[in-house]
Image (cartoon, rainbow, N blue to C red; front, top):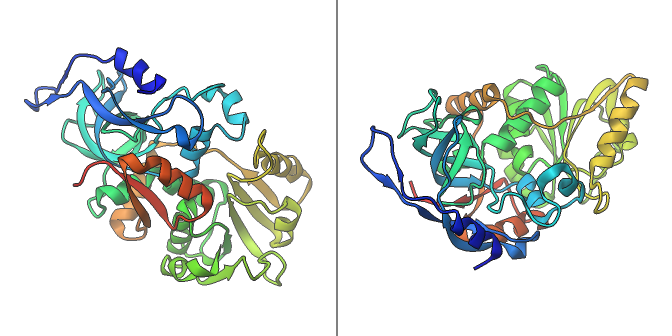
Length: 354
């Protein structure tokens, strides 16, 4: 048993009773993924204590949990800025990874009135690569009726990031020309759909082998970055959503209209210390001195955006693009495949069958 698993096991509570709405009993132990050091190779299956929900939290029976870059960065502790930011210097502070979640409420903390036991929800939790996980009630919304648990399980983080990048930060308008890089990935697959739904003309950047997939999301044009320099053509864009990119800010500016907007969402490369954050700092520092808006942001994970995303899914404007499905025991493999670029859409860890 790993050090992380042993630590959680020692703190195992007695079985948790469900509220009066149910006579079932929540077990004291559950199967979860844990790690005692940074690295995908340190993820292991273990029996650990079922967590207890705090006053503003609910306990979820997890059905599905998304696989995204944020989870990978926290699991491997890179860039090192992640560790300095308070996520653990030598090992992750949260031994069980996972953020995206879809599942069923099985217990509610004191003062929680938005949800009841038995509600199907989706959103953002803590330690969701497990049979049970806690989540703040404010970071959950009712699961869209149109979506399966697997689809809802890959929706929240990537979906609201794309939604905020386009609407709150990018201020997209119908008829504008929008360029989305990283269009075949988690955030990108939502950005293409949402931009299309809002009436923009969407040019998507992806590898040639994923072009058909990206077109199916609603892209008007797809550029294969492996064969074409998508920033060196004659086209100019009102808005560029640069997802996990590596292109210098000066080159991205050349592809913008004179008063266009650049929104940098994450970023890879840049070394072990700051990763891609250097580009973001440079863009923000330059923005006040040029006519273009050069921006970046960290998603505030607001209830209103999770609910708006859920409504778009129920309306059929957005369909979560579920990629490869992994079992709970394959969570480490899922994160490794994501980092290698093999993922298409957003992969999901399936914890329970619906």
